[in-house]
Structures are given as C-alpha cells and as structure tokens.
Length: 223
Image (cartoon, rainbow, N blue to C red; front, side):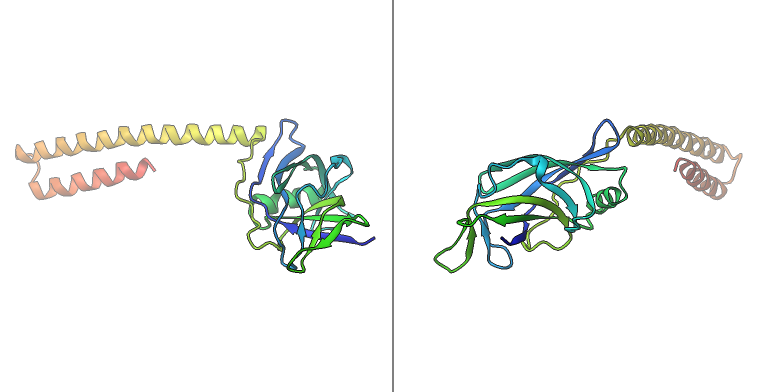
C-alpha cells in the first residue's frame, strides 16, 4: 500500500483558545471533492467512517512532531470537516498557532492509504479515490488546491488577552471622554479670548493666535 498526501481546500477555518489556556481549538475543511493540482479527486465519504483519535495532527507532515489532536471528523456534502486542538505547551504547537493566526500558513493536507479496491479512473482519466484510510491531517503552507486559504480566524479569547482587551477598551473610552472635555475647554477658552479682544483688553490679531494655540495644545493633550 502507498501512503498518499493530498492538500485540501480550506473554505472555513476557525481558531480560538479554550478556557484551560493550554489548548487552542481549530476547525476547517480537510478534503473537498474537486481535482487537486495533480488531477486526483477524493470522493465524498472516501474516508468514512473514521475514528478521529487515530488521525494525527502535524505541521508540514512532520510525523515525528505532532502538534495536537483531532477530535471530530465528519463528512458534509463534498467537504470533510475536521475539528481539533493544538497543544500550546509544545514548541511546535505554539509555532503552528502563530503561523495560523498571522496567516503565514493557511492550508490543510490529508495523508491516507488507499484500499485495494479504493481507486478508479474517471472518464477524463483522473484518479478518483473512493475508499481510503485517513492517517493524518496537517497544516501546510502551499496546498495543492490554489483556493485553499484560511478565511476566518477568531480573536484570541484567553483570559489574559480578555483582561488586556478590557483595559485597552476602558482606556479608549476614557480617552474619548477626555477628548470631548478638552474640546469643550478649547471652545470656552477661545470664546473668552475673543470676548477680551472685542472689549479691547487683547488686540484681535493676538487673540486669534491665542485661540489657535489653545485649541491645538488642548487637542494634542487628548491624544
């Protein structure tokens, strides 16, 4: 038997932290019933039924460096859907998460072994995989399907990130309130200087310079 790998279209892909802060959940489309760059096609349901616990999760097909586990694999129409967890305490796991979050890599690739009677040729002479055993689903940088890409990455929802986001949001709201107050102060200061100019206390040209200077300095303080 020959072990094959085939890159797959990733039309839906999510990544998020779970509450334990040790695992990062991932999900996506591991296989699609369309020709790949080599012209091969994996038929819908070719890998089913499959036990997710025996399907390995690798980065770039490096079999000696697993990065997590697949927990759910299901066929939906022409798509093979997968869901799993990347272990953050592993160096390669953290590397995979960083690559995925920053969209440096975005593809999925399946590794499988065809059954003896699990392949045929279609009318165009293309190899069609009809029955095979799925061994691995890897994260890859250059998938065979040109349209393979991560289309959605959820924000990091780890407890620390949520706390930082809350602090940042609070600071931004406070900054906006301060900016509004300072703008009002600038208007009031300008009005007072203008009144002084009209009453003859301050020359009009100097009043205009003071108004401009006060407005700029107060608004700069609000940034």
